[in-house]
Amino acid sequence: MAVTVQNSVQITNEIATPVVKSETTTKTGKLRFAFFTHDQVGAGDANSTVALVKLPAGRVRLIGGLSRMYVNWTQGSQTMDIGWDAYVDQNGADVAADVDGLVDGLDVDSVGYFSMESNVAAGKLLGGTHLFDSRDGVTIRALAISAMVAGDDLDGYIAYVVD
Image 1: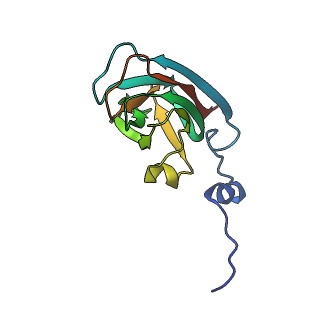
Image 2: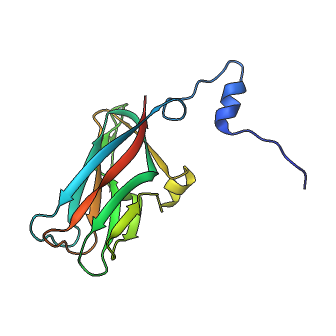
Image 3: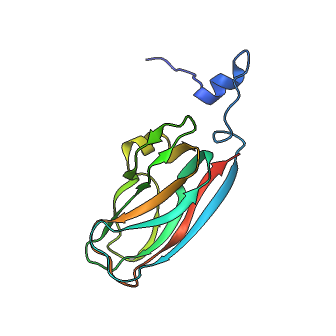
């Protein structure tokens, strides 16, 4: 084997001739937070959902590792998926909903604080981020695998980068 010296795609673009400018969701974008608070009203069957936030239209990079939530879902052996509703991309194409596209099967059996760091292979491959490019924004949604109980709490924030 030999020692190698290589560049990321972003460095390669910056030293190219002509320079290939990075999107603001990759470099120089602004970090924003969207906060959410939810108190379950009445009981909900398994697969009940909670819309958490709607991200703005355009290119938005959700940063799962900076996104946190307090979960007090009291049904025994509770797990949660986090994903998004269907939306339309910037080119007018429909993008399907993905109920567990960000987090799949998060164990929230014990009350506490949780990260939205992706445990999905595609999310891990992108450093725990997910890039949305929507015409009208994207709703981020949590799904309860087991039944919900009145008074269950879900509060937190989602961190994302925009221009």
